[in-house]
Amino acid sequence: MKFRDLKAQYSALKTEIDIAMLKVVESSSFIMGSKVKEFEDDLAQYVDVKHCISCANGTDALTLSLKAWGVTEGDAVFVPDFTFFSSAEVIPLENATPVFVDVDRETFNIDCNDLEKKIELVLAEGKLRPRVVIAVDLFGLSADYINLRKIADKYKIFILEDGAQGLGGSFKGKKNCSFGDISTTSFFPAKPLGCYGDGGAVFTDNTEWAELISSYRIHGKGSNKYDNVRIGLNSRLDTLQAAILSVKLKAFTKFENERSSELADRYSKLLKNSVIIPKIPEDYISAWAQYTIRLNDRATRDALQIYMKEQGIPTMIYYPLGMHSQTAFKYLTKESSYPVTEELCGTVLSLPMGPYLKESDQDKIVESIIKFFSL
Image 1 (cartoon, rainbow, N blue to C red):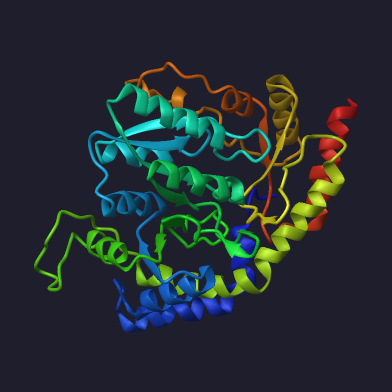
Image 2: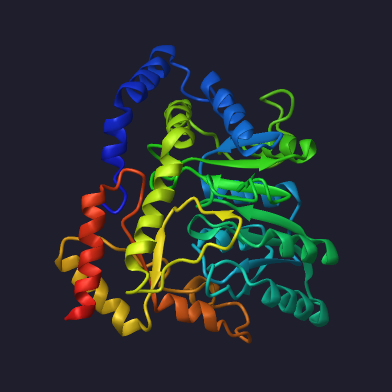
């Protein structure tokens, strides 16, 4: 059993993917070929934004966004404490300072009440300028952008939506990756829309920022490719990856996203009396990058993971450490507490998920969890 079955996906889409890859090889246009722009246009239309700028990976997508805003030394960038490392890693790379914010226990996303407290603390201290909040659509569920927007407007800060796991989700019909002033996603293979390597994209309705990001991703180039007007990155999406993603995007929009939701609903119905199932608030649709349950304590979670492994069932812990506990961030002041993050790090467990998960395998997963609690 696979945690996310990419082989099954390839088998289902093999003919189209093989043809798409061969066409790129035949064209010999491996870097910034026509397929890249075609994919960007299709994805921008799907998300319903003016501009989609592809890049080499999801981390670069965040970096490019911060560069477009000129984030620099003396700026405070607020980021959830419970997230993947890259959400916070990009901040010190721009010489800015990350300020960690606790998360909501039910949705796993940034806690707006704690965010406002942290902004007020930064203002009271007077050493940093609040500039950006990075809101992560964790496990596929969009953050609380209604309240985030109120806070952003109140304190005149930007919202950077980290939709690395969120593409395909929505709130009241508005797609994830369209909520931020700038939004980003990742095409890492295990993501809801994944390529066969690394890849990422940036989304915005702001044409000026889109032009800056387009420049930054190719060595800071100007109108002439050999006239570099700023210091940038080498962060282009390969044409082969764009061709693969174009095929996958069609499958993603036609049936994969819906199938993931069906399997998640099935998990929840079968597991609701055994574990704490994910909570999806009203009017939200998750992209279901992960199906993450919670247990009552660390000992139970760890014992269940060991038991599942013995049954041949892969599981993952996303994430065992909060940002404030990362060795790389030891240089930051540790005055704040993050009780929800610390609780989640000890109680979450992600189960096999994806549109190609067989119901027979899902039944085995559910039966194993139920049996564990009967031992």
